[in-house]
Amino acid sequence: MLLKNRQKPKIIVSNHSINSRYRVLKLVYRPHNIESKPPRSFLWVGRWFRFGVALFLFLSMLLGTSGCSSNSTSVSWLKATEIVPVDLVKRVITENSQLNPQEVLSRVNAFSVKGKAGQLIVFNFNHQGVCGKAKCLYVGYLISKNTTPVPVLATYLNPNLPPQTPLFKIVRDPSLSSDLPCLQIQQPMGKSMRQSKWCFNNHQYQIVQTSVIESTAQQK
Image 1 (cartoon, rainbow, N blue to C red):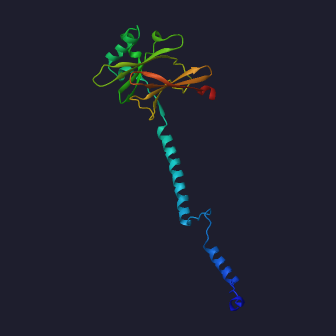
Image 2: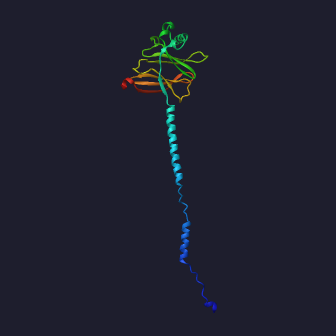
Image 3: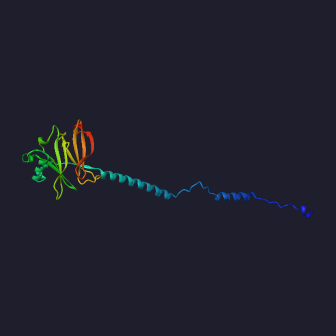
């Protein structure tokens, strides 16, 4: 009888304890899909690093462009006998024409340009005997140490160009691994001017680039 009348103990759960435990759990819970923000000092360093890289690339491109660009200079024609020995001038006349070397010797003009391979001499015979209807023969010889001069250029050109328009220009292009400077040759083509870039390929000069521009006379 005593056991039947005995009441079962009641379990009383305090709402205060549940709420307190919930608040603790909420404080320590961190969702996995939210990343923590980096320190401000790290962001400041990153911005300056990106700025430095961009500045470096810009300066490299600027210096590379100016360093690789070619520059041209006009040539100075002189009497050929003032640049090379008389015997070489006579040989050039004999090898490239049927003219009497003794008669035309004083008329031959030339200009020279130096390079790693030696000295390039371009000859202008300045005589109708090597000219066609509109063009005349121009030849270039390479003079190296302890070797016989060899021909490396031969072309027919029209010497009648507009004022202040040179027939030849010397072009030094750092981007090309040539042992001699390139030559820029200008020729009239209708109302325009054709510019041809001739470069040395270790054997002879050949055209590597051609462009058409408005002539100086038309620009004026």
